[in-house]
Image (cartoon, rainbow, N blue to C red; front, side, top):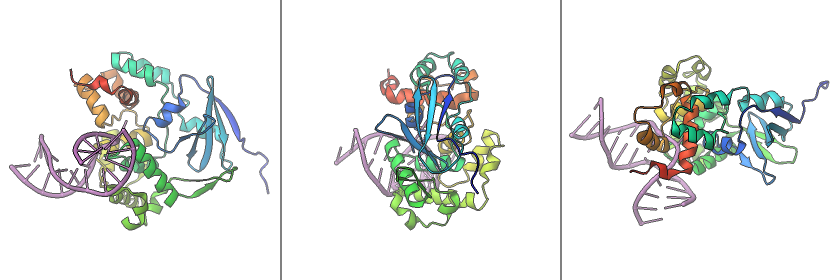
Length: 286
DNA sequence: ATCCAGGCTACAA
DNA sequence: TTGTAGCATGGA
């Protein structure tokens, strides 16, 4: 039996508003994308490997793996194409620095990543830099993810499930070189795999309760929880405070973001994060 | 070599 | 309650 309809292997998706694949994939929200020699971006969404590129205001996606997951809905959802980013940008115009951040980084979209992947990734991110986080995630997937074959013969790996990681001992996790974060990843995996923490239920919790839930995990504090909720559950009001954002907030927003920005603080934060990392001197003391 | 990185835990005081 | 040393690793 074969299906009558074969899923298309290249799709074009109209994009309204700005979209920078470069900034979106390398602004520190996801760590699994890479630039290809032809200037396109390759990555894995779930168990589908795709290559993405822009032509004008059209996003193209080509399937590299052998599955038949519908590409259009997959990419439309993952890249958050249905959200009105120009509307979000308008909310940031009330402040000079946020306006400059939007001008600089407004092509960033908040990716709709899987909750477990985001949670696990940001546990690994603590007291760490983006380059090394990328390496940790890569080794985690290669060691414990499921292989995904591609048309060109290459093999990618899915992000390992909580169930898979929950079986591991710290010694088995050693090849990933997580350092002190290894026991945190295992605790998270065990609590999720056992059902003690329901990832699904967190979708329905307001941010404060969602924070409390995630912070039951060893190694998950306020910052990791906010990142996980923003990038894994799409809770846009989350405002993770890392070293960079901390410096910028102290210097420019000692009383917090303007009120109208608060419901989308996570989006504004991401523009600001990208901006201050590229312009560290703006946070220098007077 | 020292410092730092999308921080948190454990323990002082 | 608030403050901070220590933590693994590796690049700058």
